Structures are given as C-alpha cells and as structure tokens.
View 1 (cartoon, rainbow, N blue to C red):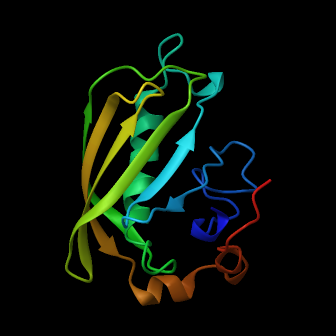
View 2: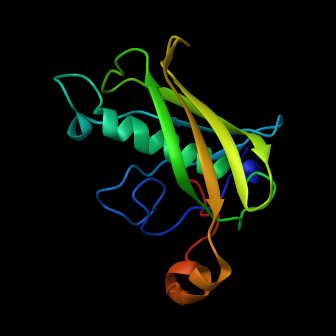
Length: 157
C-alpha cells in the first residue's frame, strides 16, 4: 500500500515527520480517487475528558480535504478558503478513527471537497465541506528551499 502513500512534509503540524508536537498522520490515495488516513488520537489532544478536541478534528478534516486535490498531482498545493464542519458525535481519545475526503468540483484554481471522519465502529463523527484555492506560484517560489525539498514520500516506520 505504500505506493499509494502521499508525500509528507518535515514540519507540518498534521503530516510532519519531524514535528515533535504534530499528529504524524500518513495519507494514502485510494483506488476510487479519494484520500484516506487512520489515526489514534492521544491523550494530549483531549478537549473534554476522554474526548478529542474539536479543533483537532477540524484540523484533520481540513488537511484531508486539501489532500484530495493531490490525488492526481502530489505537488498541487491548495489552501482552504472556506470550511464548514458538522460535528455529529464525540470522538474518543485512544480509539482509531478513519478520515476520507474527495474532490466534489474542480475548476482548476478553485476546487471544492468533502470529507468525513468515522469512528472505529464505522459511525460518522464529523463531516465537512470546503473551498480550496491554489497557492500562487510566486508564493511557492518564495518558500524555503530546504522545506520544499522536505516534501516527499517518507518510508513507513
């Protein structure tokens, strides 16, 4: 399955392989054109006792939907222009979750995506939609070369 593994950054909060405070989530392209990841939230991301903080849920959905634009092109960088999240049920700490996302409309510079976060029992805990906007080439050109070079597929540990 590692041939479907999307690239990761070195210091990104969600996918950064070298970020000591990050989530370290690895994302995979699926055969049906979606992006998928699994994650087991640790205690230090708690909101209410035993429950994952809603901001972390939003962050995971945001990243996953942004990565839906990368299924065909791993270097297609887009940022979130608008996001809407519906929290359906609490997400327990210490239990594996699965998050998926897909593009729903792609107009080139602007795209729309939807995503969902499911609990271990398969029930939906949160859904989201977003508008994605292409990062302008001049912004990418201004990025730190070492950080851009760190955007690659890292072997699974």
